[in-house]
Image (cartoon, rainbow, N blue to C red; front, side, top):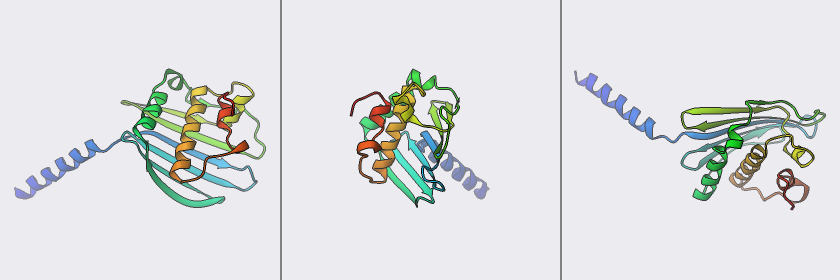
Length: 176
């Protein structure tokens, strides 16, 4: 009898702790090949309701690494507003290739948690800089990608991009 009671208490404890565990509000996965032939890498980013960030990268062009950081309340609020914006919610589940691929291929997948529902966006041959030439992707999607790249850079403690490497202002139609 006591063993049954112990099992029930342990089970209820597990349920209580599981309920309090923060959920990921965004999961991003990128498979990138190029721009140098043979180079490949993957990036996995998870952002939780409490602002915690987990970022993993691996590939033959970089070392396998895992990073953790935490967003400030202001950064988390800005991200949450963007994730819940009508423009981002209206992005289709699949976005086909907007360019012809020669030596660079970026397959992106985003899973965004909206309360009890999940939005999945899969992008074939993602090339956000294309927006500087023509409207290829929704502006909110490019803004989200720029935000995510900044979060990844800060988590990995890399310097801010400069010159031509800083393509976000151009892709968003802003002057540098």
